[in-house]
Length: 227
Image (cartoon, rainbow, N blue to C red):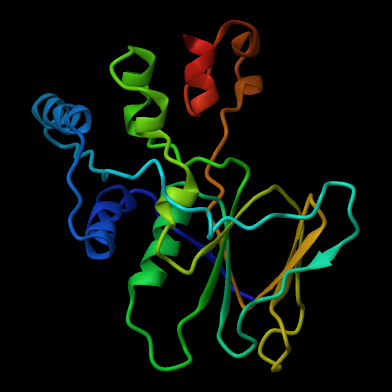
């Protein structure tokens, strides 16, 4: 098994080019284009880029996880021969990794099968959270559903939480799997490669009084609480 930490710093700008290859240079909504102009003019070293997304994309890439009280069930990969990649975390790093793997040209029978797991059904474009707080944009404009983002790809998405990771201890001995991801729903996903892109959380407990008097501003829920 190999752990890959995807970089989110470069993903912010690379996400656009990846979508342009897949969607044919989509047109940005006016509200996003005006925001990009303000961002570039006020912060010359910052480039905020994203893409327009359909709000009516299909759900074929969203897989139903077993019920919470169901027994453990093994996820059946579509192809037993092609590499299996499990990505935990759907932020910039995780999502960009999934889309990049999808866009690359692979030899015959070598294109990896990709599963993306995140506890939320929406990808949050964090650089524009402040505009949601100020009322300049709506939530759907900066938090599209993963089903929309992954439409027309073979990436499978699970809205779930990881309960435990079981890496194999015999890497390099032609083992049938490099490990297993155990989800809270009971689903077991075997993988050949694991990508951990779980991001970070605000640690309010390390600053005395912060938990009582400070509001984190990192997620869509944080923005709603702040309003």
